[in-house]
Image 1 (cartoon, rainbow, N blue to C red):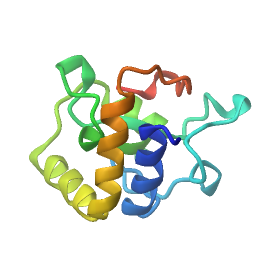
Image 2 (cartoon, rainbow, N blue to C red; image 1 turned 60 degrees about the vertical axis):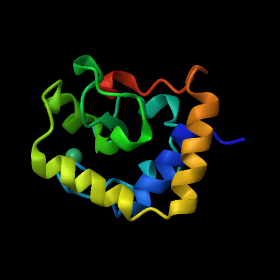
Image 3 (cartoon, rainbow, N blue to C red; image 1 turned 90 degrees about the vertical axis):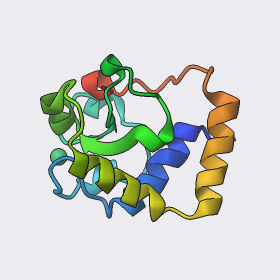
Image 4 (cartoon, rainbow, N blue to C red; image 1 turned 180 degrees about the vertical axis):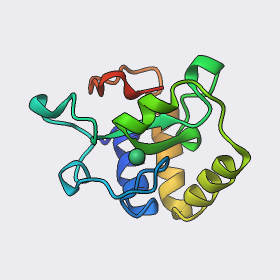
Length: 127
Ligand SMILES: [Zn+2]
């Protein structure tokens, strides 16, 4: 059964039109197919990473509705700042464009799996 983070990745890569949430530039297609990044590309600055819009360091929830996809370099540059109102509205619009059935599936998996560990180490970009 797919991990909720994998479902989130595939939903967002489409909903964000393969563009970084933070800079708006397109992801390299090599990083758009699956959430797992090959070992030799784990430090690539252009890989797609999960960005928590409200940072975990500032008590942002590790919930799909708080997650977007951003380049590793953009994610790192953002560090732990709070989202702007525009970013908050934009992420809500992105998630609203995902079908209700897909969001329900993600929520169900999130409830089932949130206590399980996530083995895909995506480097330092998971803020
Ligand atoms: Zn970017």
